Image (cartoon, rainbow, N blue to C red):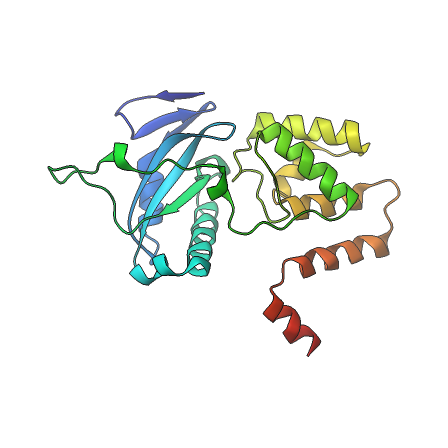
Length: 230
């Protein structure tokens, strides 16, 4: 649920949190890689979410998919260092320029609407039975097509209410004594599954360390793996 308060499009109330969009914009504008930015509340998977429309300081970023992915992640990390999770946009859309009206003002209606495919940069499919089971739970509760090991629960539209539903389903379907705190401390699916392995009644210390190592390997690029084995 979203309610507008005060100036239209500048202060919003999303899922009970009053948010000053200008505060988020100011933080992003301080980033050296950002030339222009505007933040809006938009309709996304799981309800209303925040979207940041960013014009990179370097125009060449728009021609490099890897650079775009890196910039989006850097901006997420930068915001999380200064703002609470509910103020970190779910979407980061990079644009060559912001659309303007004939009068030279920002044309908010012309900004592209994000979709679920823009929530993640690289899909890393779940492998183990537990990963597949938890990924299915996330996808069902968040009402999105698929979830990968590198996906962040909150970036996909998750919030405290949905986190409670996920925790309940994991407890019931996986039979694990998991707490809500586990998801908040491990919002990335791969990390969450590793945490679940560690709290399993049958968890073995050696197996837990092995699970961590395997999870780290899954996230390495081909070049990084070649360097390790060379």
